[in-house]
Length: 247
Image 1: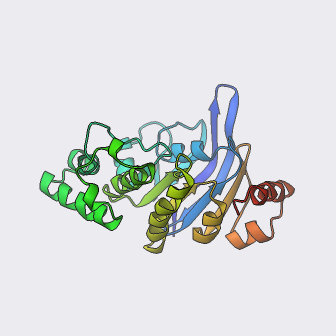
Image 2: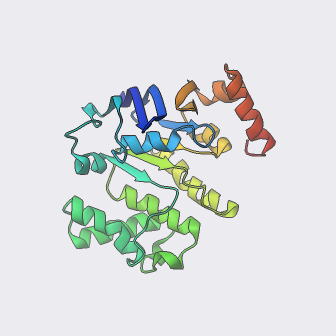
């Protein structure tokens, strides 16, 4: 069952076209990884799904509703579509628990007591229950990113967008964040990820989409993309990844 549809999506900044006719689908309970060189359009594509960036042509459809163009109910969209950024974007003046509880309280009308209970339950799930009353600057980068993921999950989204969520982390902290994403995938969460973690993408994804200069050059199951890519540019990209020790 398709959940997100990209239909001839174009995105421009002035004369610079960042997305050039993107067409693909993300099915319910599917994990799709966007890969490609920096500047290929991965992050921009994610931001367009969540209405953080407008598109100039085409349509983006989420769960049957067009979420691009004028008249979109952004609050309603973001209750359905959660997003986690590479910079953690936690509120520095709030505790971890407050960071997680505020969204459900303000946007979903959840009582403070229920929001706090849910926050603690989610924190326990990611082994951070003992950090509920800490402030973000008292946490490691990996812990902050786990809190950011939990904050998105507290809104009970139907799909999660993850934008290079390990790129700001020290290498030893990457695994603890990827483990959370791995568990979410196993639980059936629909996810669209932009990532440079090729081994992880190969392991966790149902579909790989390779972007090059704003176009989809190749898409398919991980076995096809990583073991038998069709396009010369895909082979060149993966060769560079292997040489860098990232696959």
